[in-house]
Length: 513
Ligand code: KIV
Ligand code: ZN
Image 1 (tube, helix red, strand yellow):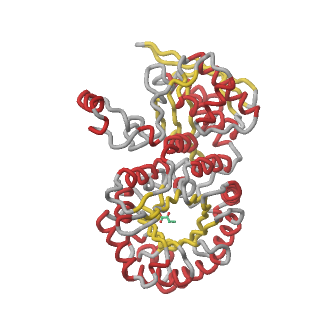
Image 2 (cartoon, protein in one colour):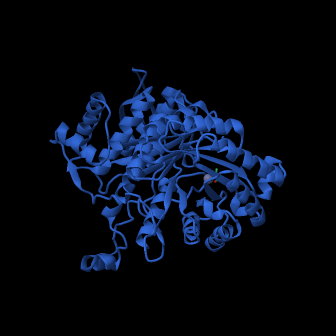
Image 3 (cartoon, helix red, strand yellow):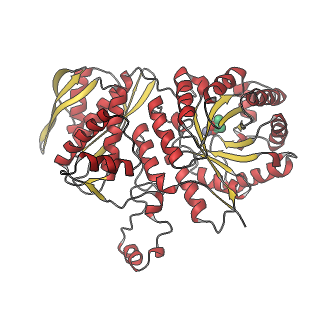
């Protein structure tokens, strides 16, 4: 029997963007949109157009370039939001409008200060306004996980009559449990008389670590769209992780009556791209996309895997896009080989000038590191793109860091500010601390350091370290990244990258602020 299609709705660029410091520029959204389309995501939620002119432009730009996926924008249930959203998604071949209003007593009383009957009327009006733009309209009763089921049945029957074509049930605060959430979906489908006219969707947050489990329980109860994000990015503890949903359904076809149309070999590339752009590193033990997800280290496991892979492996690394630490290029590789490898990795470089700049960085890296892996190329391109977008106000010219047992660490730094070289030195509790202090002595940003983290891009002591620095200033939060074989240099690059983002006039707006 033919299986149902499970629609994958990606909200990395809308809900994912609401993580601290993860806000994106238009160019960054375009890069992510291209990768999502390459991965054959069915619906791309590109942003919240009424939130700012920047997000309106970004959603419009995504709607203009995406060919196969549906492009969706989010709108609160009011006329202005819906009109902005309708205009933003208009260029799309397949536009969708997603409108929402809260339905839990706590939200209706304390946030909306509306009576339930007013909420129903507003939701119906919103769906009708949305239908003036497209016949592809999604409605979400926000905080459905804590809403009264009788009220949900009343409001959802009315919005379906008004023309909603997808009903999305969000567990906005990550409160539900798989058994209960599955039952909720089953009961809504059973009790609402016109429930068969729509696609049922779910949108789960991960506050109790149950977003994927809740989404999958809902699929077993008849949901045929899952809203999710790459790497599980999203507000607070994040959303259901796209890669986990897709691979759970694919791996357990004995359980699921449906499958997705996702090209899973694009998953690792998407994970890296999103991590690079948002500055949210992927934890090594993260399912599917973590560096250790397919590493069978323990002797007993290695022995089993060598005898027969299926003793411990339920998925194949290459099926989700891991290219087993393949040596790709070295010091003597030429520009054509470099370009060809990038294109095999799905990385398009738009201009000759950008290619030349990336090739120069590659040669510099190859001087320090003999073996260049795909992961190194991906980090290099993401750094290049970020510097290009931010039009580097600050640039690291040189760094000397000294650490010696029994001696206070210090760093000497030369930073170019708009091309003019400035120097300073400082002591610190370690070489990284000293170099950040030396940078601050020059730039005097006064920004608050919220997070500092280092990840190995590949294995081995000659690997590049990828550093994330999260800075806050004047109510803005940004994540900077830097990669280098020397982690003190990588740290200084990440700090300057974050400072460039803080200074940047480019709009990076958190849609729901
Ligand atoms: O979590 C939530 O409720 C949302 C809705 C807007 C779908 O993100
Ligand atoms: Zn959400």
